[in-house]
Image 1 (cartoon, helix red, strand yellow):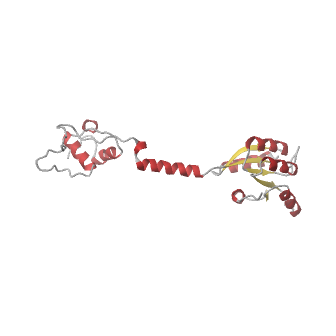
Image 2 (cartoon, rainbow, N blue to C red; image 1 turned 30 degrees about the vertical axis):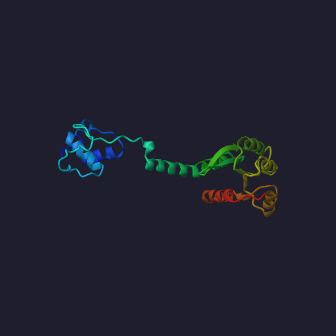
Image 3 (cartoon, rainbow, N blue to C red; image 1 turned 120 degrees about the vertical axis):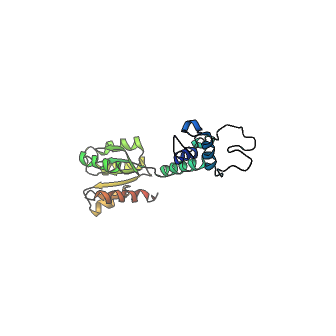
Length: 218
């Protein structure tokens, strides 16, 4: 078979993807186009005895065989692939985070760290407890990362108010202090955990994921 414009593989790809391709468009002779189309349809390219190639019952003489284009959205396999991709994307719903710390460097580092994780999105940041309450009211986060020693209003003073505004959120105290008495106090005020600032970034993110995934007791 002679193919002047494209090879058989290229022609077959065009046919398989549902494009309506005629002989003139790809540089095929009429008989070659007929043979190519029959091969793509899984039909023996040799005509039956007494019947011309490309002609069946009711076929018109001299018309090249083509396949009707199928819109991409109508292909079952294409729709399934797209639905699967959409389901995978929908499965990851980022947790909304508010970061509260009076140290600019620490606050910005935490925002950057959590912003690179696919399951967290930073929706607010604050430098003191008063700003933290405003950000929590504005954004209704899933996670609040709260420092303790801050001006205007410290974390101890902001914690009960934050808990009242977002009762279902995970509130984690992130501080340089780690006394047992302090841990008991913040837990009594509504915090879910206390993490030390010396914790490496990898374990910190892992701990936050674990805390967010744990069910909250009423």
